[in-house]
Length: 124
Image (cartoon, rainbow, N blue to C red; front, side):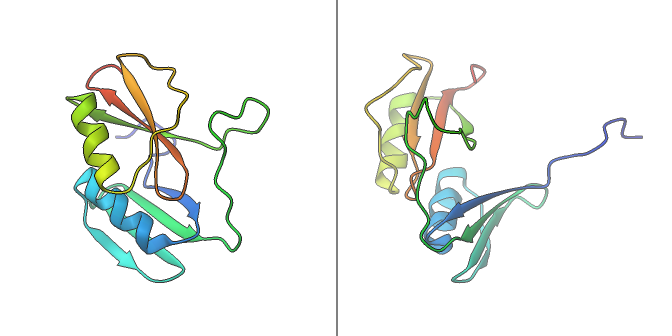
């Protein structure tokens, strides 16, 4: 019997191009794109999904923006930071100048400008 009141089934991210972001995260996470339309796309492992919804005139969050409201960020476990950064950049991620993680994690920006972190396995 489950003693928690809820379980995570999906995270939805606003963006300008849902298909592009689903393809990006599908490649980064090794997940299939399970839905792909102009206004909404999704990747899933069959248990947990990430959805991407088109928002007209979408503006990405600034990184770092200490005066703004932080929306969210994803932490992704990796075995090698340099390799993960290289692979994510090849898929369309960019690397912001501000990097607070030192040798333990790196902040990257997905193609829509959302920050996400690649973290050494066990150190997120």
